[in-house]
Length: 360
Image (tube, rainbow, N blue to C red):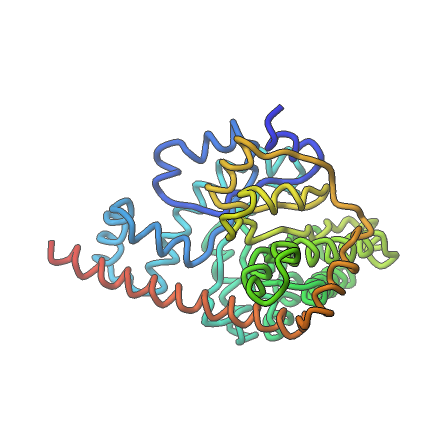
């Protein structure tokens, strides 16, 4: 059995952290689904920026939409949703067979709204309505301003992928927003089955401290934070508060591992996938990491529900002078800023292409 199939068998979903028109057109995504147990995908502005800029697959769409007056953010959203609808339809069978637990795709609200609660709510509503697919998550960052938007979106029945989470506390804030949204739906007599995932970014921890700690601590912080967060996740699922909602028909907000591509060439390129194998979770991986794990990765066990050695490892970082709370906040702010940069580059790229294609 392939390593990817083994992950699926133990209860972890494997999602692709990429979407391009090319992999839809040439059958690559179909092969990932059929051969590598891929059951969903995620996207972000950086992915679309590269996809639109690196080839001509989007030229006809840009030319046609620009001819009809579309521009900027509106043009991009139309392009992106065309791809995501196709992907959502490909994952529809697993969405149905898993009773809506799996088979999702994701579309981000504008990163410019990361610190604007009301605008994030409106954007999430607009994207979900335009997408017209039940298995599409709208991504809202778990910033302090994003948390109330997440609660309101869940209450409104919009499936949400909470992005840019970097710590247990940030995860718990996102989980609390989800729970409040579902509890309000139950109180209002609404259907409590609203899908959601909480995306914890892993590898950026190790990049941030690689030159600031002893050699034996390198490439261990991201996994330790993951283990600590996984314990909080399992405790929440076992709580009386969640059990009450589950009995009312609610679906658990699943924990998702994001940023799982290895950044250090001196360690295994399947490091995070192997270390974070766990039931009732999702691992979203770039294509390079997917192939690395599929060809030479291994499932060597599962995460302990109590977090294993997480606290011991995290204490070693504290003793080495790492302020974990401050770093988590910094990483979230830097992540939001990086998405803003990619978003602006993306819109400029579309504007430039529109002008070039108009001249041609």
